Amino acid sequence: MTMLVDFLCRFGFGLALGLVLTPAGLVPPGFFRVNLLVVMGLGTFAALLAHGALPGTTWLFPALAATVAWMGSVLWLAHRKTAGLVACGLAGLAMALGAWGAAAVVPGGGAHGGWGVMPTALRSLLSGAVIGLTVHAMLLGHWYLNAPGMSVEALRRVIDVALVAWLTQVVVSVADWQMAAATGGASSVSATVSALLSLRWLAGLAGLPVLLWMSRKTLDIPNTQSATGILYVACLAAIVGELAGQLLAASG
Image 1: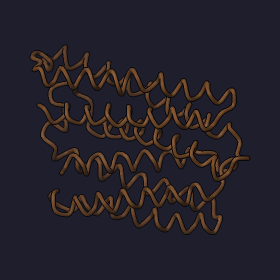
Image 2: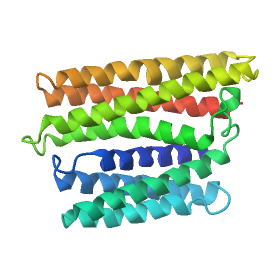
Image 3: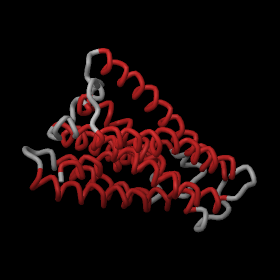
């Protein structure tokens, strides 16, 4: 249950981050309003689960995120772009704090089960960014059905940001595991851990960028529907890869 709360908070953080980085001048306010309601749903679910599963007041952070996200959706309904973007940022911050609180009580959550030494906060931010930005790109691609005249440049920018998040995570992960190996943290590998590592790399760290790049190249046609279809698969790869990473963290 704690891992689910952690995942929901990371996911919500990434979606809110995607909204902050989306060019408001190219995308209709309705997209921001609807997707803030998605963040609100994730925050509400995480708060309900955390209230009974996590010690202390960690549940307050996703609850606060849900409240701010709802207020932000109202602001976007009123076309208050600046205030709406601030609400997106605050909701993302609250979700990040919730993820850090949840990760702190997961067994091995602070050290990736012997497979890394990077701070939990950095792991949560990068993991949430990869998941959230990928799903955010898919949702934006789907929005072209509602606004067919929307500039393709908006989706192209979001995919670029998702690729940057992926690249940053790869660099940090490689450095992390090298540091762990140097300190003897990865001396023994069980069959389960080996399988999780393979899934982590194949889906989240190797397969995801290929799918993101394919969707970006599809926009050169341009064909937003086909790009969105590829992004659906990319979302699955990102979620599977990050869940494998969380299981690795708890396996220690």
